[in-house]
Image 1: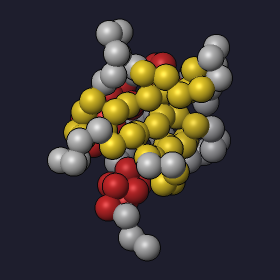
Image 2: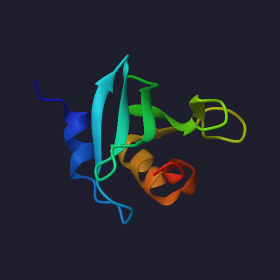
Image 3: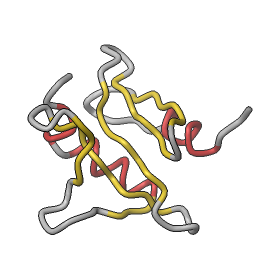
Image 4: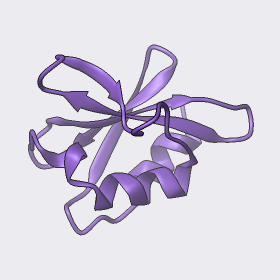
Length: 93
């Protein structure tokens, strides 16, 4: 089954390395292609292609919101750019 979101994530080029994604529980989990460690989680937030961006909290041992005042909701390309730029997503890789 072709999934446009997974294909777009696979095509995204980050200076930190390639990402792979899989669909899980109404969202997408993104992994570092080299190490296989979880990097981020994208949960559909709106029907127009926006996603809530989550990071793996080592302290809480669960996916957590990235924004200082709650959820960060971005279009897919903006979400991928944010994930590539922010250290919080790459702590465990």
